[in-house]
Amino acid sequence: MSISLNSLNALGWSLTSLAIILTFGRFWIRWKRVKQVGWDDILNGCALVALIVYMALFAVYFPISLAAELYKLGISQTPPTDSELVYALELQLANAMFFWISKYAVKASFLATYYYVFRISGNFRKAWWFVVIYTALTFLAIFFGALWGCGSPSNYANVEACSSTPLSLAIALQAYSAALNISGDLLVIALPISMLRKLSLRRSQKYGLAAIFGIVAVDIFFNCLRTAYSVDLGLASSTNLTAVWTLCEPTIAVIACALPSYRTLLSSPPKPRGPSYEEMRFRGARMGQSPQKMRSHYDIIELGSINNEPASESSIHSEV
Image 1 (cartoon, rainbow, N blue to C red):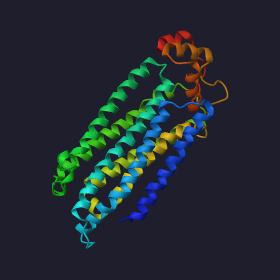
Image 2: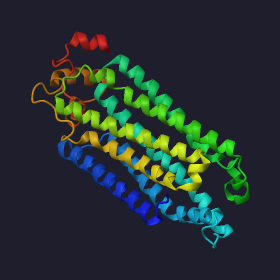
Image 3: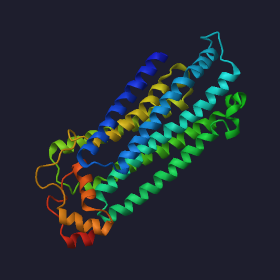
Image 4: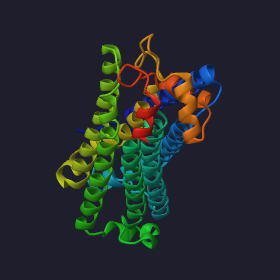
């Protein structure tokens, strides 16, 4: 099964357009309500910028790579020139870098959101720091590991060296990057679950959260498909569905990142609506942040209050 180049571009840019609309909507919602943006919004914006660059690079390098593959399979009689192949290899490396930057900016945005909402819990902060450090280390491992796709970073300008890269090395790089990425995704999903159990949520809110986590699960599924189609020579040579999974993975991640800000997915009960102002003031003094700013994140995320009642000062002390 082969997907045409025009269809791939249409798929990629359609999903990217949706990500752009939802991300700008997120900024509009935040600015309209509290006249400020948080680090979670900024990181979502960074993920979108990286995604747009990724798509632009894909549109340039992939036709050259596809032409080379078609010539190798005997379908086309016109091979790309050596200079075109070198150019495509360089762009492909940059494309892979922006792929991972976009994916990990999404993870960082979710982690920033969790910190704004749940950091009153001392136990949560410890778990949060563990996930942050793990996420940073896996990003560095994957990012710099991609430089060895042709055996060495210096070989990316050498078409012959890249063509003769051992298959075992390519499979190992794909497998370890997938394992690190998926394990990080699972940690990001699991991190807030213990805190969410303490929140008073309406059924519609639970459905909204389930939908967001479901989209993240779909993104993980695309990661598994991309890896399987990349390491299986039969699948890689008989179809270009690898490109489909590769396009879907970062675009869906950015889409999922923007969704929590929409009240249609997460709407809080009328009462109670998060911690009281005095409680926020107490927490703000402990955290070094104004009560207005702390409340703004509760207003945007709209998750309700813990245990359906304001926390007492003693309970805050015990948590922190």
